[in-house]
Length: 149
Ligand SMILES: O=C(O)CCC(=O)C(=O)O
Ligand SMILES: [Fe+2]
Image (tube, rainbow, N blue to C red; front, side, top):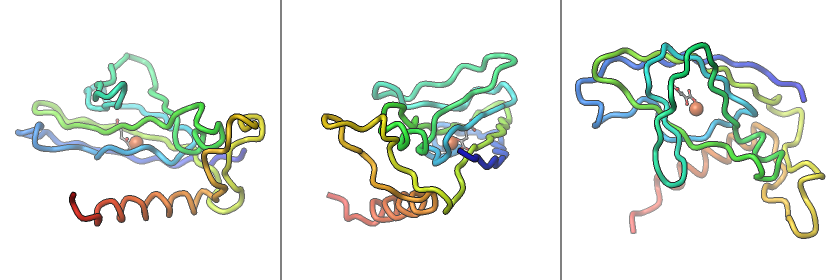
């Protein structure tokens, strides 16, 4: 699969009240894979077993996580990890995220045939990457607008 690379630089200034703020709100990446380099200041958190866990800063390493595209292609066998970033009272945090993404319109994303069987139905409808992004945005807007119960 052809992948397009996009880089995003996140700059998180020091924050006097980090508990009242977030760097990037909880989300899953739409990419196939995401690679993250950072300036060794902790701040990336992963939602794992019902809790937010802060990722360890391991010297000379790159963080890699799976995004929605691989989750769709694998029919949910590989999960797109829910993550967010928090800010720090004493230190500026910088992260460089490289997203490997499929072309927006050229291919239809759906579970690969080998991941679907009579007992394992396809969990994701066929969509282009662009349609997947639109669908996610639509869902988020709808959820935000839904009246509180
Ligand atoms: O700053 C980080 O470590 C993660 C940022 C992130 O999740 C994103 O840019 O998609
Ligand atoms: Fe992310």
